[in-house]
Length: 516
Image (cartoon, rainbow, N blue to C red; front, side, top):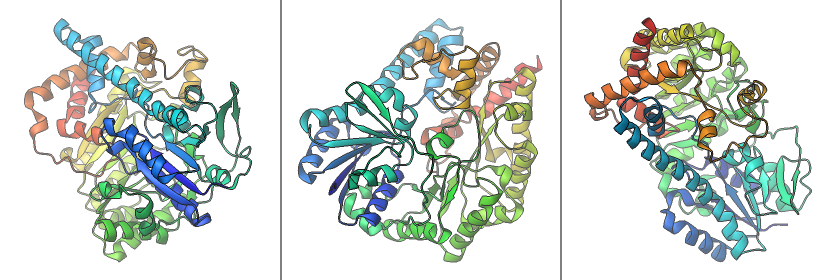
């Protein structure tokens, strides 16, 4: 039986490692005698990461080391992300100097992307080289999605966790067989996998922040950050580009609202936290989730806590009473994946909502006194898009802006990133767009370009609109308008699109082009 575990949060953008904290809490609840320590490499300068890992292993002397790999995929950039600007300028600009500059900057981004992957792979190899007897595991969202590729690039014997990891880690601690868990490993050149059809009940999960502070020495780095709180796991939808059902399963499992409030209250009192992000795939996963969501918000209001919260929310599921509770409990800016303004395209992507219901939810928010901003994520040039459906997307933005106020609505331009284990990948392999057995982590620039789904002929119209919009925003220096950067967002880079207001300009330009 393992008596000590060192968790290592691999380098990524600074974001509270909520998954590791819940995992460590579960281990403590079941086996309180097991010593635990969390090391966050993401908040250390790169030169200090390897020494910090060595020092943690030597001083803590773990029996088991578990890496958590959160981020790996960048092939769905948005108009707050410079990689999209480099790609479009390089492919579509008529200015040869701008194309050359964009090519060099794009190459730099490409190199940095693969350097990031290699760096994360280097830490398990460091451990294998210098501490060969130490048992290792690896999990997290990035590993779960790309496990088939990454397991071939990692040391033999490391055990990969797919999806939620509590059951697998508890069995490792207890020395039990893993065959009925979702795991993958490589031994003697052969890849072995376990299967698991059930998902874990999380109703008893509650953080003990005082304990967490003892096992996470770097916790102070997050006292002024947005803290993630999970209210449920699982997503019942079948959105064709989304990984959540693969990672968490389709069965939705709920935490009791009183325990969720207890988590929030601990962070509020001990760390002074005032900003929270519900890390669920969707805060409102359907009508069956409304009682839990309602009680969470009612408890926040009754507690008198002055917080700001947000998360991924389908406005199509917001009712008038819920909208009032959202506003009263401190809802902040919202990120809404509208994807398309065409119901036909939404149906083709299996999005599972009606646009009229989305508009209705926005009206309820307005009537309730919502004063935040709404980021509308549009994935233009999705399968099924035509010039007519693009016009519908432009009109849908105008309709939501009319409801909530133009100064509160910010369209954000995305492109679908093709990822393993999704319906979109299956479809595009079936259509011959991708080859069966392709490597999603390939360094082939032509494949990388295909993985950013933006096929002709619409690609040229969209690119032209983007290039025109970026020139306008650059001239107007919108980035200096004074819009505060401090906001409740899972992705800070996404908010750069709000600061520049480039998405709105893109939609204006696209609307004009589509009139011709």
